[in-house]
Image (cartoon, rainbow, N blue to C red; front, side, top):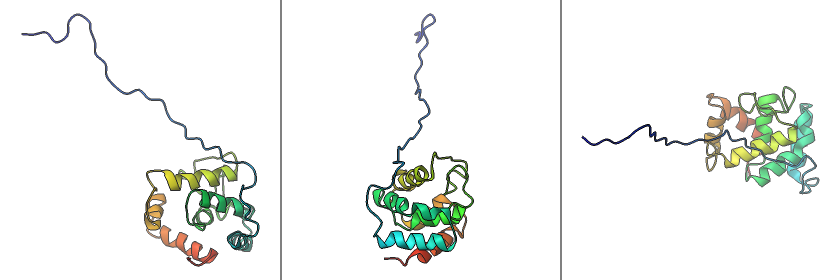
Length: 158
């Protein structure tokens, strides 16, 4: 019989990996693009002002995150409205209830850019239609309808 291992030779094969921290370094200043005269910005401000939401101060940031990540410009504000009433109930600068509300962001701006990035680039959401994105974001049966209703309140579909 042939010996496969001799002496105290030990063979180890495996993958060793360290946890990966995804860090987006979103700008902590005003958006680079000038959204002051953009009708979308005005629509967002009006929508959030009606409900006296803190998110009204980030209307341009929502647009920048949507434009940078090729998202419907109404999606992020609608998620923030459903999840935290536009920042009224946000904890840890998490306007979106991201990670079941456990995620914390250094600023609301960082949260907006981070969530926008993941909705566009994460394998969970990338290249999926709105209904699939929303079902992944929150699988409750009525969730997608609520978000889409807010999207329509902000502005009709283009």
